[in-house]
Image (cartoon, rainbow, N blue to C red):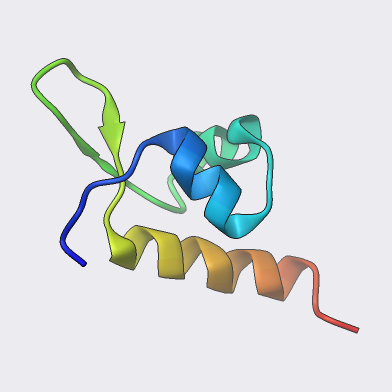
Length: 61
């Protein structure tokens, strides 16, 4: 999948609030691309990285 995702889509996929995704961006843990309108666009690599970060913070159990 080469589709670029919006913040809300990434949040839904990862099971977190939009603001959580933005907080990780502000901290520099994920760095999405920007489109021509300067909106964040996330790749599948960004989504997988965020999932790994979240699983380390909240391990399944």
